[in-house]
Length: 427
Image (cartoon, rainbow, N blue to C red; front, top):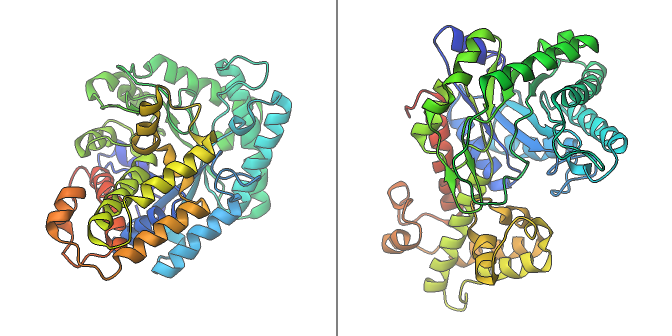
């Protein structure tokens, strides 16, 4: 695992020494810092950090960061925390025309090529090619041949950028049955995993079209396929992994010994479910909203504690500030949440989709979190208040815990389940 854990996933599965790797899909500095600190403590770990097409692109995405700025942002935190940058793998998620899908295909694909080029030039070495969505005037879902043809076009851009940059060529993730970037916007019932025959067809058509386009070597660096294992989360519910339903997919890996699966939307799954995913051929576990959801719980729990303990702090000012910020700029949640006024309020703040995560970088929100930090700086929080407002954390923290320690503990508690799953379920 020391050299290249991504390249070794399929081989480790074949020889019975399987392991997994957690993909951190977040741009929140507390999340990134927590993940880096855990990697520093675990001297054997390689840290996989991913950015999505909507979050980071050549126009800045919703974070305002281009790919090179995102890499610089992560590496600055790594330097501060003492993590060797060679232990970080940068991945690009859902790289394709999705941010520009309201534009004509020719225009959207040209921008997608520029985005992939920018990612690879910045040092991203794990590239998820996702051209599954239709553009203006096209069906919402494209046929497999068109998806693979566009994926090959994007791979050509990535290969050209990698050769110009020098160093190792990228590894690729393919797959057409992928959750939408940012999660689904409705309650979810039972999910049907991808059929093994459909996954086989995805692999074969990509192999054929890559070969046709002179990309046989690039296809040899395809390490995983995104399929639906039967896990997902919506605004208000989570579908738990049922291992018996994905046996066909697991069996297909016998035919495809160089591949594994990448599991998207694993947020909120139990440690046992995550472990089962790794065991069954899904060793790349992607998590994003589940991390910022836990952080929001810590923010809001401390907001309540400060309201109880600190004179002149006010009544939940952080939560009230976030409500104003989200109402003033509804673009990140308005089309994703549904229902009456009361239901929309609850979803804005407490949804599993965690679309509040788009607002933490807003200057007003940053100031409100800073005020919370200052209000509780040097304040000894009684265990009884921790039990009341942050009940999962008291056993991990002493009475002198400061807000920063609580923020990192909340995120770290989620990552601990992933780390354990990647090691076969043990701490």
